[in-house]
Length: 450
Image 1 (spheres, rainbow, N blue to C red):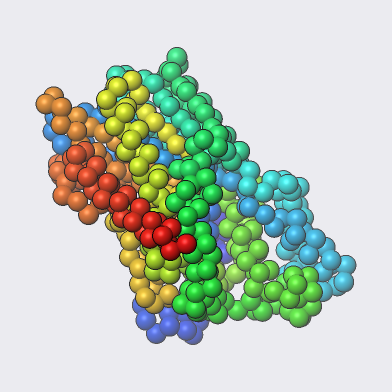
Image 2: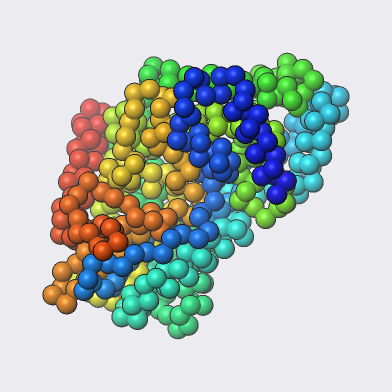
């Protein structure tokens, strides 16, 4: 309650402040983050606790198979906990901190023992997310597991992904004692489980061009436009008596210091600890920090124009694997659920490759990116489920769910009574093959140019 009260008050003050709306009505993303500041954590946003129940399929169709790709559950931040701890201790020893800075340091010191050496680890909140997803899957589609109860699950070699897979399958075993579950992990799966790794031949072939593109003038210009909105000195000035004295503690890079603070604040929602640091930022600053972070993911893994599509073409390997596994499983009829546990960036690239609804727009103005593509739609445990339905005549329809809510593709579909879109499997396969071919074309052109 304390956090929400503070943020409501801060939001009112920020809206009343000059320039907050830049003379225009606030954008969609800004309003959503004001309404729910946790969304400003971007990829640290937590999975929805109570997704809507799925609607009924078209008459005569019953679910019989599920294909799943999901991100690991909630985790600790990827690093910086120790660095921040030592920075604040040095600042304290040198009497550089403001009263607020000293209070912030004490709050962080109390939390630090539970965060130390946990960078990237799955939290118990992350396990609970998987318990919920597995429970709802069995509840919503019980027929899948009655007919073909075998579950096949693989994960990235990342420990947080392995533990995520284990938590999901543990809940499946609780829901259905005796169910046949087969789990595995290893480098053999990494070509599609981690699309942005050297195990993926498409990524390896294009990596040199992507590295060159990082120095692309357009990318740097647009990145710096969004970073320039953030007043790093004002933020550091709340903590330090003089922002200049903070520079030696962060090699002169105040913006990097602020990024570390943003990551700390964003990641605290993912762990079981009753502390919140959102009061460090005004709502306007929190939104601006998210927008700059959001742009980085959009540029490197979304539909941005800077890398010529190479950033999403790497997901062609994953999409091909989803198709191949589904064809095999439907042919053999022995697997009811096939799960893959990987990373958010792989799913970002996949949705861009698929031109899924809401994930393919690429505005030219960097300040408009936030209202067309948002990282908070890729929360901890984000997952894409392909639910397969069949009627008595053997016709197969597929319903796509992102975070257990419907995802649309630019394809004709059969519409259920409640408006849900269901795609003919043959038509969906053909569309996916077209997108895979486009991804291969982009990669081959890069390879030819080596």
